[in-house]
Length: 285
Image (cartoon, rainbow, N blue to C red; front, side, top):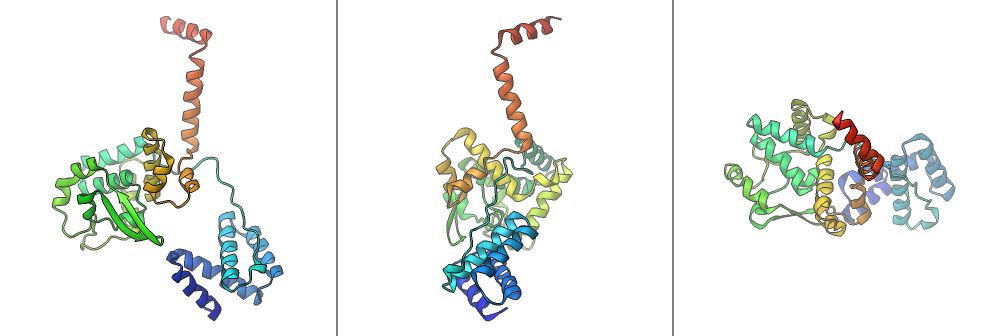
C-alpha cells in the first residue's frame, strides 16, 4: 500500500468507518493512483468516467465517493468531482413474505429445531442487522434492550416483551452470555448465520434468495408500519441516521406491488353497480 493510502486508511480508522468501507475506499484510491500517479481535476474526472463506463452504478458511485474523500483528506477540494447518482429501484426483490416466514418457522418448530426457530424469530422481530444479531446477549432479556457499539455509535436494539416471555424457557438452557452462540460457545460468524438461514429455507420450501439475513430486517420494517405509521420511530428502532434510508425499506417487491394493485382495483370495482349485479348473477348461476 502506498504511504499516502496508508495514511488515508489510518484517517478512516480514526473516523470510525467500518472495515468494509475502509477496504473499498483504499482500493479505489490505490487503483486511481496506479493509473494516474498524480491527482488533478482532469485525472479525477477521467477516473470517474472510466468507472461509470466500466462498472455498475453502485460501484462507480462508491469509488467516486472514496476519491472525493481522499481529496478532502489531503486538502485538494479543487479536485473533487460530482458524485455518481444511483437511481433507486421502484421495487425491491428477494424480500421474504409473511407467509414464507411463517412457513419457515413452522417447519423449524415441527422438526424440533428450537434454536433455528428462535434465531429466525429474533431476526424478524428485532430488526437487527446480522452483524448485530450475532452479538445479542442475555442482558437484553432482562432490560428489553441490547446495547452495542456499531457504525461509530451506541446501537440500542429492542427486544419485544412478548418475545422475552415466550423464549424464556429456551434461553435458560443456553450457556454463556450470548443468545445464539456457536457450537463451541463463541460468537457465531455472520456467514455461518446466513448459511443456516439459507439451508433451512431450502428444507422448508422457501426460496433461498429470500431467506438472507437482511430480508428479515425488511420484513420487520414492513410489519411494524402495518400497526404503527411513525416512520421516525422506525428510523430509531432500525438504527438509521437518515430517514431516507428507512423509507427505502418500505418499497414493495414487484410481486407485492402487483398484489396490492389488484386489491386496490378489486375494492374500486366492488363499488360499481354493474359489477355487483354481474357477480350476483354469476353466483346464482
